[in-house]
Image 1 (cartoon, rainbow, N blue to C red):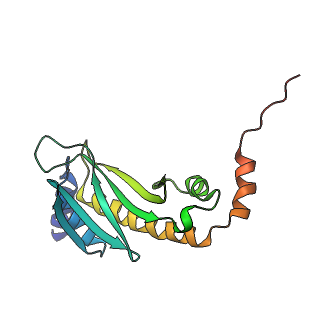
Image 2: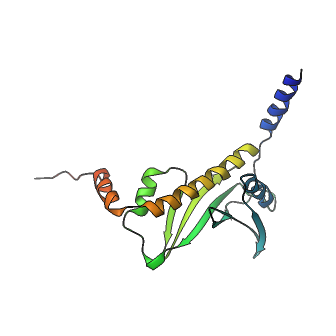
Image 3: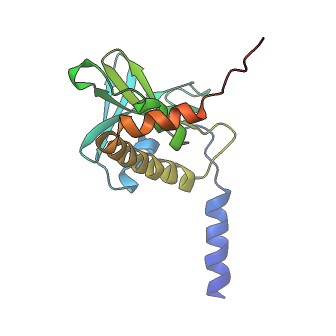
Length: 169
């Protein structure tokens, strides 16, 4: 009988869907993967800050939900300053060729690893925790990518994947 009760409790947990999120919910998901969280307010908007692998990240809010303080999407973002003002040729392209869930965006002397999260339509609380866990894994993989990137190896791979133009007479 206890097996049936355990199953029904699990089933009811998975039936709870989140259609919008609050800074506190995201903070709890971040804490669930072992990261500390700071929630502040700046210019009337909540700011959620944390860190993984010794590097800070933040939550950037997307579209507001119908209720104040709730959002239907957000972006996890870790901005980094580029030392000496330039990245090795092919670093961003090589990351995008090999990874699917997080993108790198360059803004002048800054780059940012970013991952969008959408909850509209409904997601489970477990989904939020898993997305944050995936984010922290992507951060670790990105830092390894930065440390181990070899532009000499990336150049032939990029050339091999570029479409070849056909010669015309």
